[in-house]
Length: 63
Ligand code: SF4
Image (tube, rainbow, N blue to C red; front, top):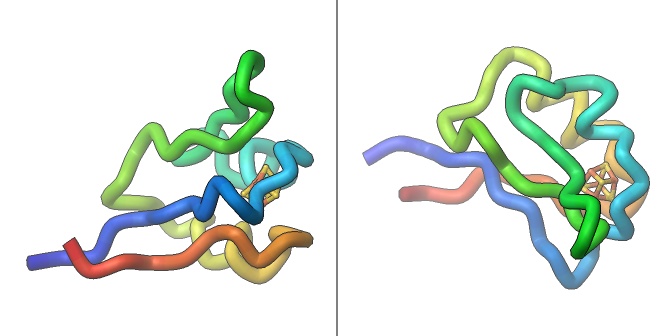
């Protein structure tokens, strides 16, 4: 059991900050305009994205 990166799509406004800070893990979907997690196991830059997301949409979830 590990932790995976989770984006709450009800909260995400697609601002793109997470993708800018951490493109390895996040990508904003052009159609839905919501962030998609492309690397669920995360990377060092995830913490900064969690702290910076204006909608507090990013968190770690237990698998
Ligand atoms: S920083 Fe937050 S609100 Fe902005 S795209 Fe990423 S998850 Fe969505």
